[in-house]
Image (tube, rainbow, N blue to C red; front, side, top):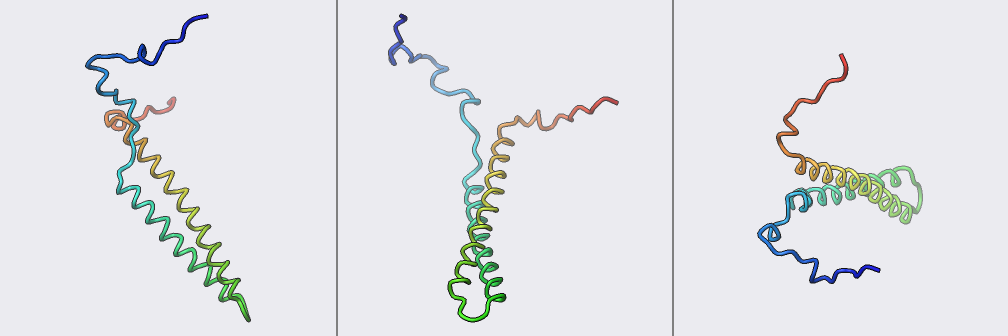
Amino acid sequence: MADSPSPDDLHFEGPDDAIPPDDAIPPVPTRAAYLTSFAAVVLAGLFGATIGYGIVDVSCTGDCGAATASGAVVGAMSAAIGVGVIAVLVLRAMAEWKRTPPDVRARPRPRGPS
């Protein structure tokens, strides 16, 4: 049975050890992009709550306090979840765009067989 190396044996010293390669650091969107996407989800939730409340309020007669509240909650949740999914996809696309070198993006794509 082979001896497993100790954690001290796994440390390499040298000038290349101080800075990780570019591929090791995952590119992330800026903080402004995160804050903008958060604000978009909150705003969509507010608009969804308004729409949900309005739809139930218009269609309900009599005592509709619980129904309008549940309409507002359902509207807010569905709108916020929908915009949240789009925000995550946009942030992932931004991260992938940062990861692709500019010279690769500038090259024309090869066309199919002619």
